Amino acid sequence: MKSAPLIVSAAILTIAMATRLSMAAESAAGTAPTFNKDVAAILFNNCVICHRPNQVAPMTLMSYKEVRPWARAIKEKVIKGEMPPWRADGRFGKFRNDRRLAPEQIKTIVDWVDGGAPEGDTALTAELPVFHDGWSHPSGRPPDYILEMAEPFNVPALGELPNFTIYQELPPELKQKEHFLEAIQILPGVMPAVHHASFGIVPLAPGQKVGRGEAWPGGPIVAGALLDAKTGESVGFQGDANEVAAGEGEPTDAGVTVRRRTEVGTRFCCYVPGGNFQQFRDGAGKRIPTEGYIAWGMHYTPIGKPLVDKTRVGFWFQKEMTHEIVEISTGNLTHIVLGKQLVDSEFTPVRTAGVGNTGFPALPVIPPNAKNWAITGIRVFQDDVTLYVLWPHMHTRGKEMTYLLTYPDGREEVLLSVPNYDFNWQIFYELKEPLKIPAGSTIKTIGSYDNSPANKWNPAPQKEVYWT
Image (cartoon, rainbow, N blue to C red; front, side, top):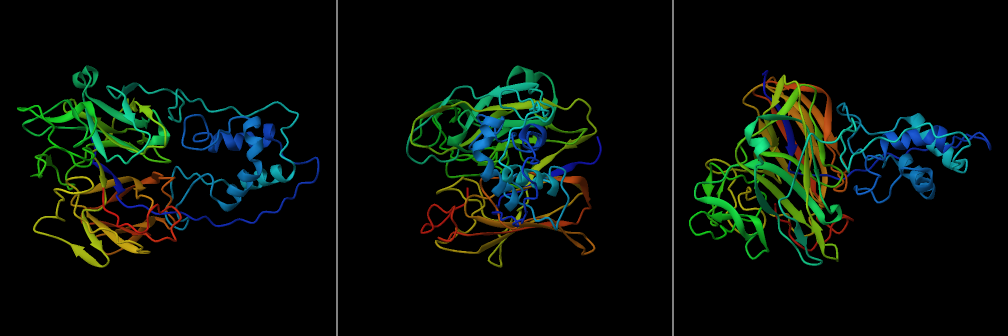
């Protein structure tokens, strides 16, 4: 194995605005591009990854019949740069998964729409990508191994559900042999009702077991609850165990042992709007532990009718390993809120009770109607690392986020800037070339939130916002 690479994700998000393009239609009557000859290839290669059945996009775009009613809307979106979604400021960083269309592709779509959006007389030349049962590996092949929740979860029609965790035994296939992941994807069973989800493998604290009990205090009975090994009663844990992993740490009021976020995380992948698939580079892989418990970190949002979810995760195994991914972590180990650093004897205080996830840093709430609430997370690297991916993650109040790398000699480099964060499109930004970061460097994750009525995605500007 070579040096330990790192994937950094940050617990803060932003919203994106794209520069408006002005494009004039230049095609004369009878010479417009056609769907079959010119446009289908653009849509199939750039759009149907999301615009297909049971995916996050609101309509499918897999045939001329499906595309034609949306032709003018497609033109408007590509001119504005809103589709395909890409929220990064083009001045900073180069990314291998850059989704932006080339100017000539945008012009082809504009000319096609302005020419009447014809299907064309020639046969369709573009081929649709191959997708197996909703999976998104670029090769088109299905996962090497699929895991699903041990039993379905009933999502009620109404109400508010907290973050919670369902535990599950590791299957024998994963206990008997060590595997490394080349790619991983979470696939919710009912995507509209899944606000977000995570998958991890975690240890249990001494004195705990998994069995039938409350999913959270006062919640429904599930097979994979966290119980007291002696009494068989629920320990009262509420939250995402992949973020607040059972292990070394401080006991909470609920009797749960939590691990501080300074340690190596156990989360492998998550589902969020616009992002649920992660692929590592050739030769790089994430080790799957052969012991511990599967942890499904779930957050459902009722949508007005009862639903039944059975989320799955797909594994693609790395065949030839040269590098091990040893950490998929957050970039916010020290916090500065509104210019004030939050510290105590060891780290930002860990919340032990109250709303949100037990065990998370006790960050101040975002006040009602706050328009530009600023926070900076600082990560110091004690060892040489290799950075592959940056993932801005915030909720609907997220406004903007920038990652700033400072080298030991004082040089600074903006790795990624997302000036207008969009909760609906939470994109993994994969560096075009892995970045070697020397020990002694820091990454500052600089973000802000808009909890005011001016934020169109804000459901309740009159309420304070806590951290989960």
